[in-house]
Image (cartoon, rainbow, N blue to C red; front, side, top):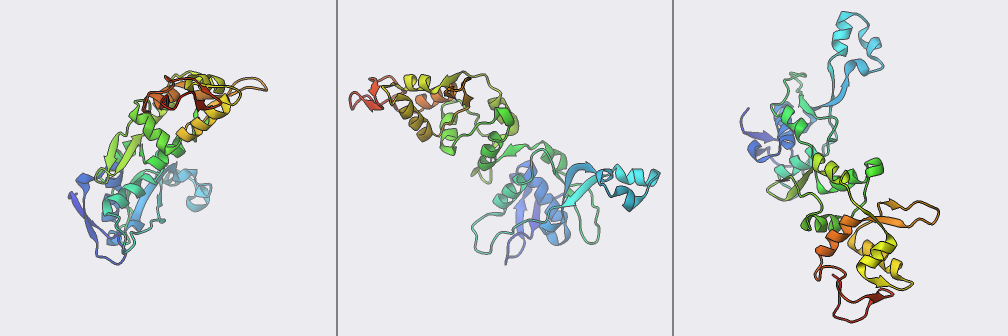
Length: 282
């Protein structure tokens, strides 16, 4: 397949030419599928649902039984993706950006791009980058936060600013790749899983307050406000009816190191206020 293809993905414009070599594997597979489709349009993109045709509860009704039906039932269940929103006529979005964003909208662990179809040839060969696209398990920033928050007992909630701060401090993983001309950072799922599985100490909010230098009856309240301002959220609660909320100690330490003044090394604070104006902890 040529490295430059034409795609009809821009409303009110002629098909645009895209250099496949500038795309990530997943976006490249999407571009290849569109190029192979009828009219170079995205309506011919086929994805693999991860099931077989035999998994369809109507398989026997549609195909009967016997060797021929069994052979059909063993085939992968391919589906068209039809919810593509083309680039608006006046949008500054580039074709590469559109491809990367839409490729990432296909779930990481299911429905990988499998091939393309046209009116003349409904079951064409798989796209050349199909296998590479299956291994391209990277997520955009928005997807990263949804992924981190949707991992059961390991889930964490964190703001985008805090995520960036923790990367700068060396606590959170850095992007594996930058797509769309370097404008779209992408994190690999394996790196995110390793971060969620890391071993870290859990500090109750009273311990956090002490680490930040807060004292007095409002110390824990001030610590909570600081955690909220930093975009760091509890990772659980200590045992017992009156158990305190607990935070990831490594995140707090990383956040302190990323702040001017490096954390609590100033005077103690009474009720969340500094004893002197020049002792800011961050």
